[in-house]
Amino acid sequence: MKILIIGGNGTIGKPVVAHFKEQNEVLIAGRSSGDITVDIANSNSISKMFQKIGNVDAIICIAGEAKWANFNELEEEDYHLGLNSKLMGQVNLVRIGQNYLNTGGSITLSTGILADDPVVKTTSAAMVNGGIHSFVMAVALEIENNIRVNVVSSGMVEDAYEKYRDYFPGHNPIPMKKVINGYVRSVNGKGNGEIIRIYD
Image (cartoon, rainbow, N blue to C red):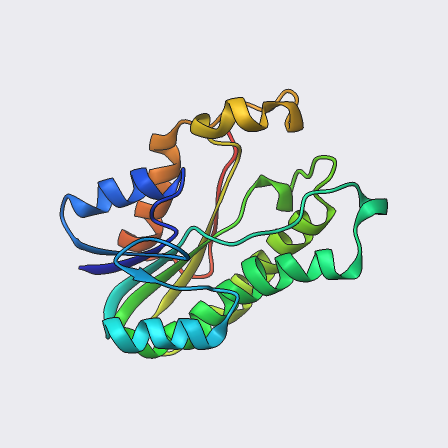
């Protein structure tokens, strides 16, 4: 397969890319590095990316930002960071990317445990993740050409444990192999509209 991975140079992206590269052609897209650059918060940037690379068999997005801060410190524009980047960025990848997917292709989005088990300072991030979950379940009912849309929702991964452990007291770090398998299940399986939760 020809697979486009947005955010392929990140903490989760790198091992996911390494896995899929073993048997597939992988293109990495990123905001500042990769085979092609893209800003998912900008729909024109998404369109230009697809115009350059043409059709693919699978799209994986492991990118998107959201503001972490105490609720009473969040201004309206802070919410728009997550809405424009992680939420609408991934929605636009589906909206535009479906036109560049071969029949029977798949789109895999990414969220995280905050949608179901938020911690402090994540009002905006949790809201965005939950919105993506609802979007995936709904769009799967309507998307055409046998395209499948799923989302991988992971707990705090082992490789980021030291950085984020204080935000997630008592949470078990998730082995990267389990996270990789979530993306494998979405791309190589037959599920559609699934929230693939990897929380323990």
